[in-house]
Length: 121
Image 1: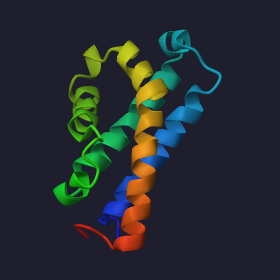
Image 2: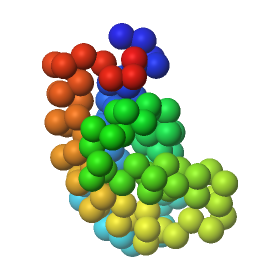
Image 3: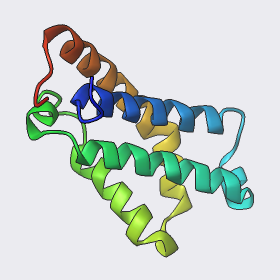
Image 4: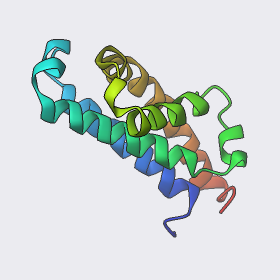
């Protein structure tokens, strides 16, 4: 598998989501305000997720139409280009609610592509 393989990119998304979720285990929303390393690390994982999503072929995205691809990519753009206006409430909500939901969408997509060939590879 090459690094351009959509399954590799989906795995990067999955791994970054899992990392972010591990970072917030036993943490609170208030920790995000006081722990700059936590904030930076969460944003970094979200940038990875968005960047990997932006590199997926449209055919792969079409296989999971309920996945909010545009919002995922948009979050990456906000973190990178609007770094000074990123809302920590949005970061926390993304980490605690959206990433677990994303994992439930990524896992079957990864499994499907692994079993049935590589769309867009």
